[in-house]
Image (cartoon, rainbow, N blue to C red; front, side, top):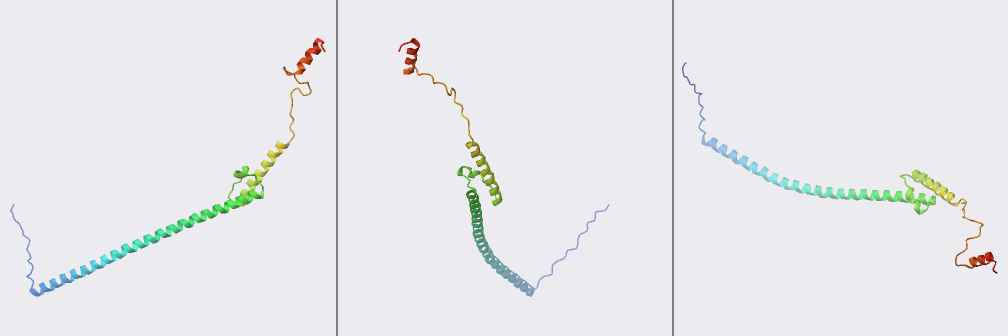
Length: 164
């Protein structure tokens, strides 16, 4: 076998002329100038973008605060209306204060139904309390036992012994 090495032909760059070199230099300077211009604009836009983001964040926070306040006010209004409706139903059915906790519901119909149920329970309770109760008194109709230090014992002994 033979040892052959092939070498690739080399190409040499043609020598540039001074006019081409000046054109190339001018293009490089022009590109650098454009790059600086765009860099300056990018920095200006970056600052403006940051400022815009700050303004949006501040207004978003204000908007969120206002939304939260509006939600809280709506909840308070709904609670006040529900409480007023409950008080109205309780007053209409004359429910005593001890039984107010049993009148609950979300709508007027539910509150009315509960108030009527409580009213019936109160009526049944007061009816059972007013019925006549029979009280048994032990040894009713008999003479009471005599006290040990009373005149009754002395007179009972005198009559038993025949002393007047």
